Length: 371
Image (cartoon, rainbow, N blue to C red; front, side, top):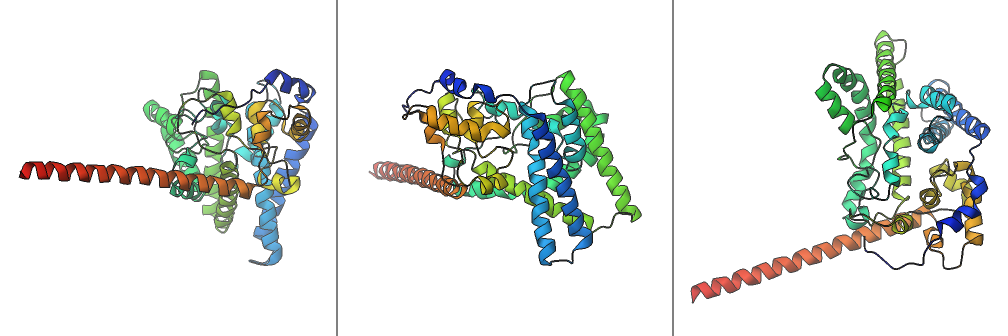
């Protein structure tokens, strides 16, 4: 990423403005998550067993199911940033009601902390960043195809690869490094876990295997109808696709892989303060304030809107924080596509110039040889 001159951002001043907003409220966490998860389960049941296929009520229930489960799933982001040793009951409840059944246990997202480390952000050690703004638009489309394969990969990972990894330590290390992260970059290599993390890792992995094996047994026995699978697959794809689109709007993705400053990391991130109801649907649990989250990762999601309003009101007029706002997700996606297209066109122009130079050089050598 090209280093630009920006006014300085005083972290001390910014933190002072929001200093009273860093305490998470357990009541909000529990109520929000339980209502979202249980609402998603009810809507899923309505889709499968109550409403007529392809009827308007079924379609509305399906949309509500996806949105509610999507909101419940994204509490995994909060779990990563909550102080270690806190919210233990909530962590267990999230995994039992959401993480395990949807094959997205919390250990799969532990690598998110790498995304917030200045030395790792936007580099090969950051699995949640791809230089999409510096590549052709084709890479954006390829990324948006991932959600269609991930549900199948998740089943294979926990139903087949997990028990095999318990037998072979060498294969276990491979699975840990290459198939145990919820990231953008499929080539990301995860560091091997510590002993403490490995215990959590193994417990959640076993529970996911038992869930898959039990569901397979119920399907074979005819207790759960096979129609369950396409419905579950479509819900999973919709959740993952919404999250993929949200992720595309979280950053500008203009870092080509080098280490950047904290300020450049902030300016690469985007806030969406407008249209709060609509934004909360596609970027729930506070993720519409992604730049603010990079500024203060430990701010609880339910205080982000208030914190952003304070910062915009009290920071200096030339504060770089003001440059993090985008009017809408559509505007950010259009800008990302345009940036990607311009970068691709520039690369093609450079490549064409090099080819012309090579042809000219070869022609001159040929003429020289002929003489």
